[in-house]
Length: 237
Image 1 (cartoon, rainbow, N blue to C red):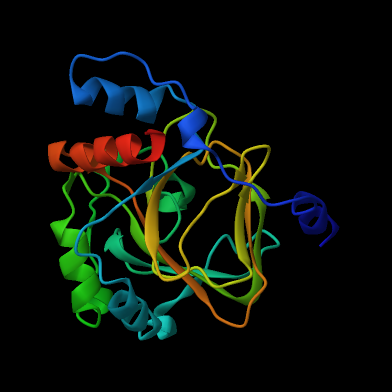
Image 2 (tube, rainbow, N blue to C red):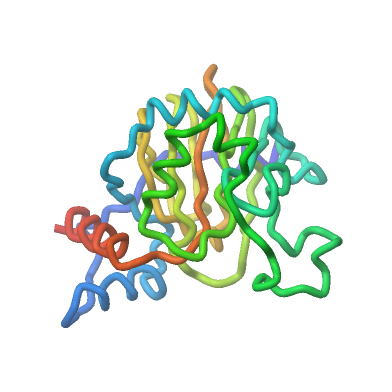
């Protein structure tokens, strides 16, 4: 708990994109590639059209009986998840964390939609299936119970704005903070961000409502890249 209190000590702040200097570019794809791979931005808010956050939040609560504790060998509190798409609904960790996957490469892993979840979450299924992504890997509903927290950690060593984090809600009092990079500004009633999880980050749900997000790992297709470009221009102009 001392680690958490220390991490969240200090004022809340967010990145001011209007102060960012964009590179010159000939095609919008060049700007998108720079933002994702070279900007070192910790996060980038993305407008997702046709996202019914309220209905997806209600659906996500209907599969709480399928939740597995996430990173149960660590000291987080109230953090659990279930796969919408993955190896299986209850295999929510990275593929190479499982003993029976040792000696394999990710190309050997068979991902697919998890019937136990999508049969009960048709709105979430249809929305994820509509996203302009290919090579979907894990797509997980992530729960953080009221009063729960995710201790400071990072998930990789290299910078990249990926994965896509879709907040179905972000309760008042729940803070997603990145070390030295400020707070990720998820709207209370739902929104999305590309997130660079090489940054040390932590979430503290100091509210009376569960926080429910969907994390999408996959390859972005051209229509999504246009959404990223539109978001950059909206934020930086």
